[in-house]
Length: 129
Figure (tube, rainbow, N blue to C red):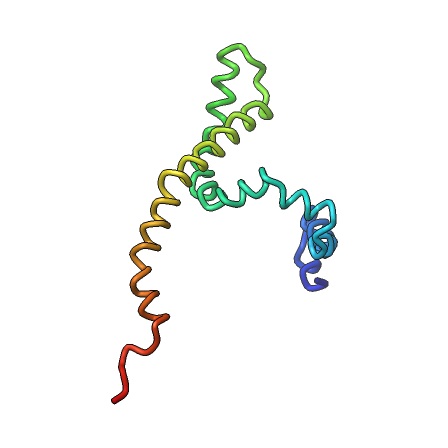
């Protein structure tokens, strides 16, 4: 940890110092942090995390056009509202990507791999004579 502090700057120092505290809180399942991270919405974001990773860049790029569109519509030109809209659309797109692409592909790969897995669990393919 001390080595990390040598290369950390600004907010990074706080993150490096608080990381052991977070790990300690997560080590016991009874802590408030562990219960919060195990809640339904946070769990679902974890399920969608790969899809979120795939869609985040195009949506983050839309934050300024959304801000300008809100200004054109007469809504206050606030970055918070633009970020909320972009984040909501990003989560919705990730949920759809997970539901209609990721899960069907996972199922197809599992079905495709099932015969090979069953053969590997049956034992050696060569029977000694």
